[in-house]
Structures are given as C-alpha cells and as structure tokens.
Length: 182
Length: 323
Image 1 (cartoon, rainbow over the protein chains, first blue to last red):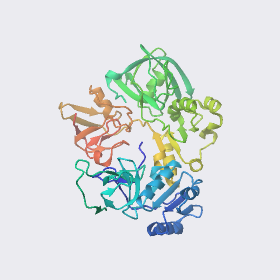
Image 2 (image 1 turned 45 degrees about the vertical axis):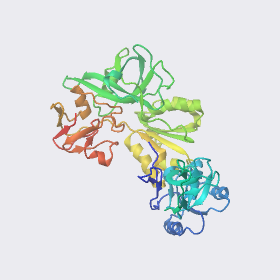
Image 3 (image 1 turned 90 degrees about the vertical axis):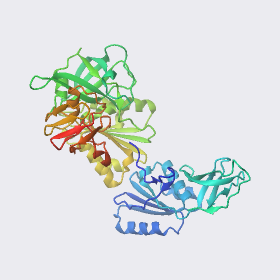
Image 4 (image 1 turned 180 degrees about the horizontal axis):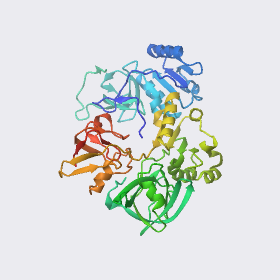
C-alpha cells in the first residue's frame, strides 16, 4: 500500500507541489505546530483554535524554529506515533522540516504543509550543483558557475529546491530580461 | 507477480496432514516433479479443489491460502485451512476429502502482503487462522534481526494454532490473547505505546481489521503505517445471469457461487490472484446492468463500469460483460 501523500502535484509540471488548506485533525495524541518565525499568522490561528478545543490530555505544541533547527526539533523527540504535524514558512523551510520529520520516523501522511508564505525559491544548479536561496527572478545567474539559469517548476523534495538549467546553452550571445516568478 | 492462469499451475502432493487447532488443519505440500521455488514472506497460493457439490455435480473450488512455512524452504510448502462454520465447500473439502498422497493443483506463490523491510518496528496482529502469513514473516524477521512483536488473538476452543510453539520461539516478542480464557487485546493501549516508525500488519477476521483501523483513526495513528490482509470468501446472494458480449454466451450464476467461479466453470480464463476482492487482477468491464460492489479494490470512477467477479454480484437480474 502506498503511503497517502498530503501534497498534490501540479498537473503541468508533475513535481511542483500544490498545497491544500490545512485540516485540523482532532483526536490526535499530540498536535504539533511548526512555524519558521512568529509571522505565521494562519498557523498561529489554527494553533489557538486547537488549544481551545483540545482534550486536557492532548499535547499541543507551538514550535518556532530559530537559527538552531536541531534544538527546536529536540522538542519532538518524545512525540508518539499518533501525532499530527502542521508546518508553515517559506517553501524551502517546509521541505527541510518535512525531511527532518521523516528522518525522525514521522509518516508522510501525518505532516501537513501550509501554502508557502513567500514566492522565494531555493534553486539547484544542474551544472555545478550549487544551491541558492531566496531566488525571485528567472533567469538567475548561478553563484557557483555563472550560468544564466532558467528556473524551472521542476521541484526536488529532497532538496526543497527548483531545478535551474542553462537558458542559452545553444547560443551564448542570447540574453534574457529576468522576470519575477509566481 | 504471476496471474492465475492455467499454464502457470503447479502440481503438488500432500505429504503430511495434521490438526494444529481444533478447527485448523495443516497440509504439507511437496512438488510432484521438479522443485518448489522460494517465496517472499506473506505470499499465498491458490489451491484448486475438484470435488462434487451437494447435488453430486462436479465442482471446482479455488481458495487462496497463505504459505506458512519458512520462505527459504524449497522442500515443502505448508498451508493451514480453517474449517469454516458455513463452508462454501472449499474448507470442508480440504478437511474431509483430501488424503495424504493426494495431488493438488496450486498457483505459484504470489504476494499481496509483504512486510516493509525499512520499517523501524513491525507490529504483527493476528486473529485466529490469520496467524498463517506471519508464520512466513517470522523466520525472515529473525534472520534479519528486525524489531518485531507478535500479538496473537484467538479462541482456544477453535483456533490458536502454533501458539505454544511461537511463545517458546519468540519469548516476550509474542503476546497471546485467548478469548476463550477471557484474555482480550486492548488495541488502543497497544497502538498508543508504539514508537514512531512502527508499521502494523493485521491478518484475521474483518472485525479485527476494522477494530484496529478504527482505534488507529481515533487516536491519529497514520493510516500509511497500517497494512492488512483479509481473504474474504465470496458471500452468496441472489442468482443472476451474465451475457458475454464477444461470444454471445449466457451464463447463470447460482446463489452460492461467485461470478468468477461461474465464468471459470464455463471455461473462461480470467486472470486472478487473491479471489477476495483486493488484488485487482480479475477486473472486468461491465457494458450493461447494475453491480453490487463488494470488493476493496475499485475506485469510485471504476465502479461505474467495472466489476470484480471474484466477490461482486449483480444488483440487476442480468449483466452484460465485455468478455
């Protein structure tokens, strides 16, 4: 049986995640809310609602992941198998969290990712393997090899990054005006 | 996996037979010629039984049984058959007709219930004769040093095969619950104490499977960690008939037989593996008529124009099939 994935894929680019509204699941032993920073208002609202309806013997955790990610995740080490996890932040953060959680033996179907809080992308250069943060425009100049990278919607869950490929490999004299991505 | 078509059948001889619980008989099967292949833990075979029905008419039954011998043993396969209180004929045949030395036809092993070896821990929950697939898990799990626990629920007056032997071999990794002695498994407590990464495997009656799934859903145990196998025998229903579009043939299906059995009796070869509405092999297109779906395989969209003939029947008097 395949694990049920909470993330649906965009039909045009099969790997690009599309995010559904989070569903507050009641009856879980632990409810874990993981925010990238204090700005995650939507998640905070959900957390407050959860606190107001939770059974007294349920644990509801609000975790703001600071600079020391490892320290933040230590709080989850004792979480039981019956737990629901909700994550909010920018896209690379969401997938980094998800990978950390999977590494801690949480199951894919107990992790819900909120729609990313910004359009900033992590970019992976297919030519020199450099990872770049906070990319907003395409093409983007690779900080590793200097290639003009077309930022594709092709997404790697492992790296939480989009794939960038040379936009002028055929004709090096071609130049493109960077456009802001959605 | 190999579909159950006649060209893939194996002939085996019953070399030994013994009661392993008041209602469960174990059969040891050896190859008539050649060797048996090793199989993967959780595999089953479909046994063809040729006998006569209540009216003395020749009839074939085909039932799926889990292999319970060590998967690395190619000398012999073992299966165990519970005598069903309301037998459709198959378990009755195995219990009263089959003798040592008899030759039976089986399919090569197929697996719809393999353990996920990457799991951190395996929690096996067996109910009654549902112990059988786990009998093939255990030797391999012990060889691999896997972390596992077996929770075995049964009624000592009817089932409970291998319980003593398992207790001896597994020690604390085996917990027994004999309902006839008043011992029952507290499923909620059991599920709650599992560490993350624990995959649950359930084999037994529908009631047990549903019990675990409901408890799991209630406490929020992730569904992706729960695996189950239920070989539900096809349930009887109203008689109906089907017309086959390609040959124009009309076939009557009696109250006690399944559509798949009726098609096979008319010499049609329908691929099949589990004969219990889960594997999807026998999916057949329906051109006309209403289906009473009883399977656990078809999605909502497919139900509009398909049937699983191993368990499902017609709601209308007739169906037209694309066969």
